[in-house]
Amino acid sequence: MRLNKVLNEWDVPHAMVVHDLMVVAKFGRHTKGKFQVSKTAKDLSSRRAKFFAKIAETYLFEYNHARNARSEFTALGNWDIFLNIINVEAEQGLTEAHLVKTLYGLEKRAHVIDREYYDHAGFLFTHVLQPLSWIGFLEETSEGGRLSDRTYWKTPLWRAYLQLETDDMAHVPNRH
Image 1 (cartoon, rainbow, N blue to C red):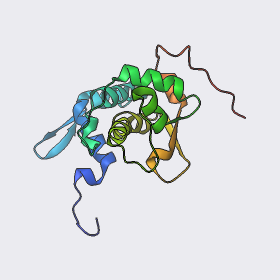
Image 2: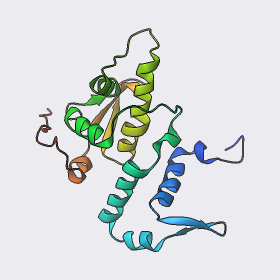
Image 3: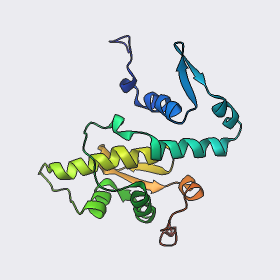
Image 4: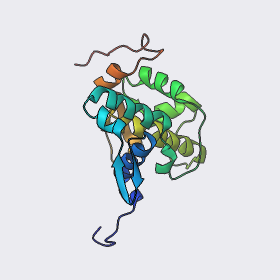
């Protein structure tokens, strides 16, 4: 901001996502140079649980996460597969590398730039892990400074909001 004096949407990704989400969810629209909040959004604002449910569903299942991606690569899979695998695996802590191996059988190799691995890892981060973290369903912890070193854990919101086929396979671990 100090250098450019102008910010573009992609300079502030969280604000860009909120703006786009408001439009996709039909919570507002641009009219005569101003953004007007819809009647639906005003009505839902007093009912937090329903408002969150609409935001979460729109953000996860309707929003175009490719806008935050640096690559046009698309990996196989869908939300049903991703959520059910994460539901089981994130009980013990899930890393990006573990998710890539579980879903696609690809492993990160030391001192080798494996384009296929990084394409899949980048896709999962941008389209699955980051949205689940931003909406509050996953918590990130970091051992190192790199994004790929993060471990993801399910939050209480995950358990309260999502009902998945693998719920009986996922059990709360004993933490000491």
